[in-house]
Image 1 (cartoon, rainbow, N blue to C red):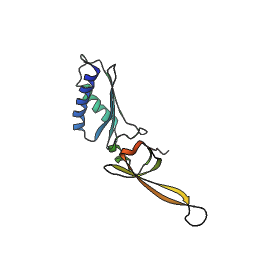
Image 2: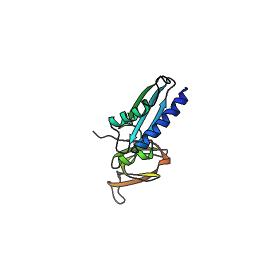
Image 3: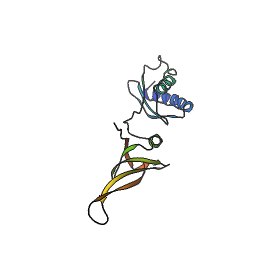
Image 4: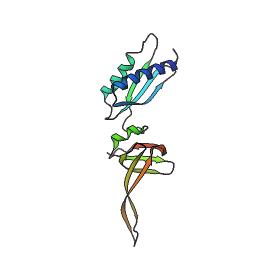
Amino acid sequence: MTGRGLQQRVEMLLKDAFEKRPDLFPISLKVGSDQSIRIILDGDNGVSLQDCMEISRAVEHQLDREEFDFSLEVSSAGATALLELPRQYHKHLGRTLEVKTEASEIKGTLESVGEHEIALSWKAREPKPIGKGKHTVRKEEVIPFSEIQKAKVVLKF
């Protein structure tokens, strides 16, 4: 079977596995020409090693090694991975994100996640409206998912 046939078979197996685990979802699936399968997961409550093993078994145990000479890797998206799906934002409420759009780059706290957008807030130093010096103001911006080019969680150490 071709790499495309293997990809379709894996997609079908993943669909079944995710129906049993609706808290998990795929970020990417790549099937190489050498029949290497790489699956990256995320979950509404994070992803554990047990979750990766469960999805791995759901795929591996349904593929025939006589038909496919494959390798399989299942991993979580990771703390520093880019946020690629709107569903990923919910678990990061209250965390600091770096969001790049065509117009700007914003680093702020994720305040809310809507159906079509996110809201970030941050503090900025601006000139006082009257007199000399600066004062701290709270800024907020609503950014539609369609305008986000890149978004990631900023880790604090």
